[in-house]
Image (cartoon, rainbow, N blue to C red; front, top):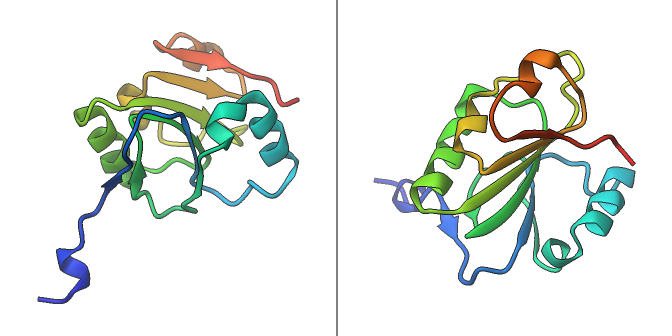
Length: 129
C-alpha cells in the first residue's frame, strides 16, 4: 500500500476560530481583498486549498466556484463533524454549478441571483463589492 493511501483525506484544524478557506484561485485578485475586508477575523486564519478539499475547521468560510458533485464529500464530512460551514459561492452566472453541497452548509452566500435558487433554505445574496 502506498504512503499516500494511508493519509487521511481531511484535516480538522484545532480551535474554533473563524477560518477562511479558498478552494479556487481568486484570493490574490480584488475579490480576495474584498472578502478579507468583509471577514477580517476569518482572514487571520486563511488557507489556500485550490481544489484540494482537505482542510476543515469548526467555523469555516469556504470560497468556491464551479461546484461539482465530486466536491460533496468535503462538505458532507464537515457537517458530520459538526462544523459551521458558510459557503461563499461566486461565479455561477450561468446557473450550471451543482448545488448539492448547499444541503451540508449552515449558510450559502451567492453573488448571482435566481428566483429558483433564492427559494432554497439558507441561501442569501451578496452582490460583489
